[in-house]
Length: 409
Image 1 (spheres, rainbow, N blue to C red):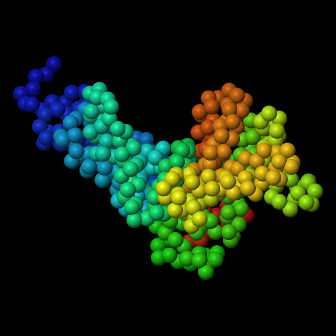
Image 2 (cartoon, helix red, strand yellow; image 1 turned 60 degrees about the vertical axis):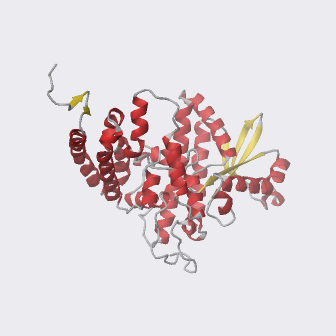
Image 3 (tube, rainbow, N blue to C red; image 1 turned 45 degrees about the vertical axis):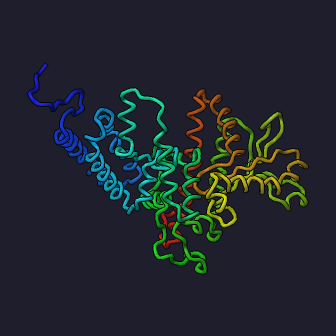
């Protein structure tokens, strides 16, 4: 073992000693990470979706987390803040968007809290160091960070409603999807850039120009009008694509199901809306009528409660669907099950229960862990939802899309 004549040592990759020595060591680690971060900026120019995944998984928090866990925060904090700024600059450049302090705070939340998983080393350094010396009983830093993020939007009910919606269970599942163009699980660069801006609450339509499809309505910064606009067929296309994902999953699980059931009924019954999907023998031999809809928590009808309670827009939509369809479904011997999604990807409780049952059937059929099937199902559903929203936003900002996309269908 080598002897040291100074109080400065490096043990198991961690600096121990004076502040200047520790800072110099961490600075060298930052410099080594700069090569990867620069490469991610180049990658982001052609595939920002892959660049973001790599930045989250191996380009940010993970690069210096060992230092954060093994070095007292007082010796490392300045360099951790500097590295955090490097990561922020990399994110801004590879995604080609400008972040505000509030949107960056959201981006640093975990996926389960509605963020992008770009965790803050500086914020977590105290908890990381204490955890490494086996101290227990601390509050979850993610919980505190979420509260800080929500409180930072104290001037806007719409921002609070948005942040509560994106932090709902499964809402961020689209960010965990492994991109695969062949499986329809990827976003093109324009879609991804718009989706990230919309997800983080950045201005999606600077200057509030008029909607390209209905000029009498100006576009709002959070994109509420664009994702709810009835013109152009985007809302119908989004609905049908989500319906098809559920229908295909039913078929893969060997559940007999058909779309738009009710077309063969008598004239009196066809006057009301048929089931989007009719699943035979869903529960105790009784068919289930799945009625799918997407609602925005920023809708004036819901926004006040949505700014206080996550998922309240979906709850209200479920009640509305039951009020409209229960009588008809009862007459036909069906069970009405609303599948309600908020525009940011939060699903209503009845949809969650239905998807859990569906995942159980599919897991048994494919001999796969149910948890894996659940993640895959929500990932495909919410990527489909976010892609449709991003395209709607792009179209209403006057951007053209490629042939074969929703603008041409």
